[in-house]
Length: 80
Image 1 (cartoon, rainbow, N blue to C red):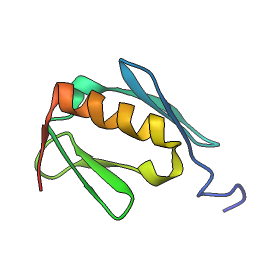
Image 2 (tube, rainbow, N blue to C red):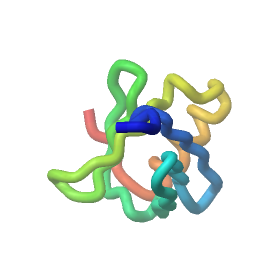
Image 3 (cartoon, rainbow, N blue to C red):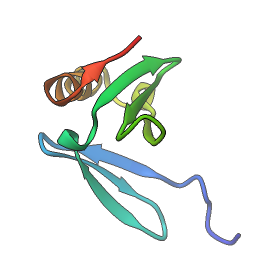
Image 4 (tube, helix red, strand yellow):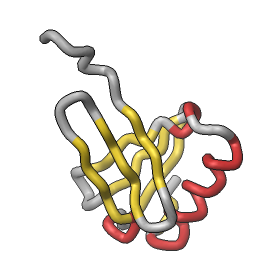
């Protein structure tokens, strides 16, 4: 495959989640997500009932983890 397929960078601001790989870059508005849940250090942020974005929240510093949760809470519903 050449380049490392697991080389993914994630960052965020108050409006978007940014995802960068060696071959692509994307930004997803927090208002895109309709629901989310957290388990085992991962957040699953759902765009609809079948499609979700995995956010490895355990890889972020604690203050960023709280901010990500707050941004999701502002725009979507936490499910358990």
